[in-house]
Length: 326
Image 1 (cartoon, one colour):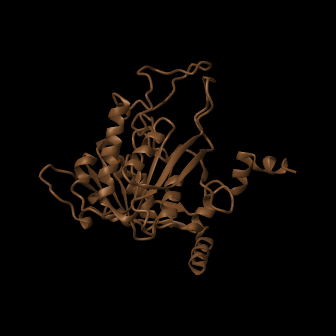
Image 2 (cartoon, helix red, strand yellow):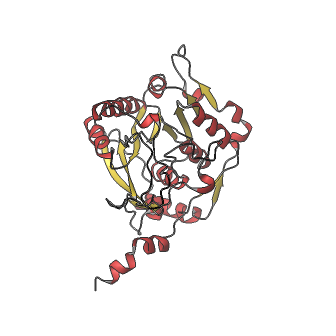
Image 3 (cartoon, rainbow, N blue to C red):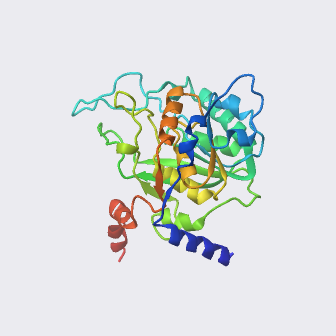
């Protein structure tokens, strides 16, 4: 066990400063998308590996063989329950660009719970016994999702807290500033030996012991994919930094990663750059078009965190806390 840990640590130390790039998709970008058809009864893994399937995830998942994937990442609707009206900041009177997409609308908690239960049930079927799953959400829904996961037999390994270095400002001043999101990390079968790369966990945690707190910025600037009007195309696009941490800590090179609600394709994008395989499913043609364009460009991903240990300490004022303990 000690030898295994030393190997992982030696690998992570030597690889920390290496930039990974993958241009394999550049020569195959025209064949990236598969449009799901009703007549199609079954997909072989080779047919859909490193592809994005344009279609209804509930229909597509049924066409994938059971126990096929090594890891699943799900960024589901958050059911934010925002009012159906324009929101303006009290002081500067500018419009708040919140999540007002149709896919985040549900008639009730019961309807939302059934949606999540149905998704997690079908996803569990295609997971290998030792496969793990990540589900991200905010306080609006993460607790409901966690209960459903446990009810379905998933074994929760960790609850990772993503602390955002650049959260949306608290303009109204009637509650705490929402600067975190939660990621539930669970395994399909707790009796199986799941993949956990402790060396990377120690790199990305706030200290040297690989804690369950990740400090990283939200998706902004050039990384944020925009529409033709210059507005963000996807309301909740996740940053490369977050998916990098998810994939490196819980998979091995060559593993198959599934994202059943791919959005603009960050999961598959990062997976390929880190020498993992992926299957993405997305129902929105605009998002799939963005994925195609995204994969036509060279991409590089650095294994070191975008936020240094020193920056984390300064941001979280750890020095002041520890210094006051006497």
